[in-house]
Length: 362
Image (tube, rainbow, N blue to C red; front, side, top):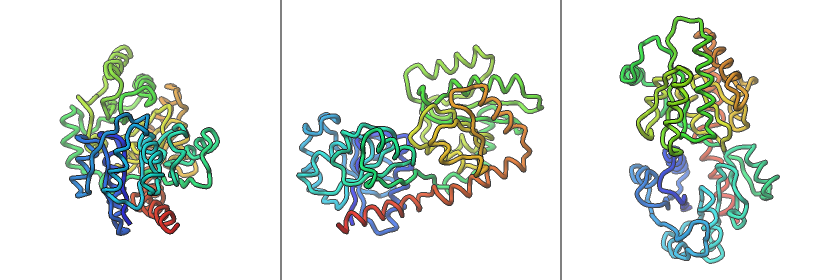
C-alpha cells in the first residue's frame, strides 16, 4: 500500500506531530510520501526522517479547477490512497479524483466548509465534537467519518532535568520560582489576554513564599499581538516571558515550566495540550470541548476553568498552586495514563491503517 500525505502548506505548527504519525504508520509496512509546498518545515521534517517529498504549489488553492497539474503529479507518484490535511488540499484532491481515480481520505483539524470535502472518499475527525459539528452543521455523512484523535509522543517529551535547569537559568529563574506557561501562536482565540489577566489576579492573591512567573510559549501569529501582550502585562503590573520569535522546539520551554495553562476560546483538538501533559505538567484548561475530551473531573487529570473568564482561571491556578506536591503528581500520573490509553502515535496509526485497509479492500 502506498499513501501520499498531501497538505497544501509549507509550514505547520504541528509539522513534527504530522511526521510522527507517518513514522508510526511505517510500522504497518506502508510506503509513504509527502506532497507539500516547497521550502518550509513540512518539507524539512519529512526529508530529515527519510520520507520522500514532492513539492507543488497550486495556481489558486480555493479554485481546484485551475490546478490540473495535480493529476499529472498523482500519475507520477501512483499512490493507492491520498490522505489530505487542511481544506484546500481536500478540495484539490477531491475535485480531481474523477480523473486520477485514487481514494481520498481527508482529516478535519478544525471546523471547515463542507464544499471542500464533498468528493472525499472518507473522513477522519481529530475530535468527537468536531465530527458532530461537521455532520450536524455542515451535512457531512456521519457513516463515513472516523474519529482519530491527535497524539503526542510521550518518550519525546519526557523531561530532561539538566536541560530544565540550564534553560531556567537562561530565563533568569531561580530554583524555587514557579513558572506558569501557556503555549500557542499569538492569536485572539488562544486567549492569552485572559491568561495574563488571570496571572495578575493570582500574583495579587498568592500568599506563598515562591516567586511566580508567566511564559507564553509560541510566537508568530497576528501582527502586533506580541506587543499587545507586553503592554497588557505592563498595565497590570506583571512581567511575562516571551520568546523572541517562533519556537520550533517547545520542549525546553515545557521542561522549564511547572504548571501548564491553556485558556483557548476555541480549538480543533489541541496537540499543544497533549505535549504539555506529556512533559509531566499539571494543567489548567478552558471548558471548551476539545479540552474536555482530554481533561475531566472524572479522570482527575487537570483543572477546568470557564472560557474567557480571568477570575475563573485565577481561581483554578491558585488551586493548583495550593495543592501539595503529591496531589499534583497524582494529576500528572493520571494524565500519563490517559495519554497512553488514547493519544499515542501508535494508537492513531493503528486506527488510520484500518481506514486505509477498508478503502483499499473495496
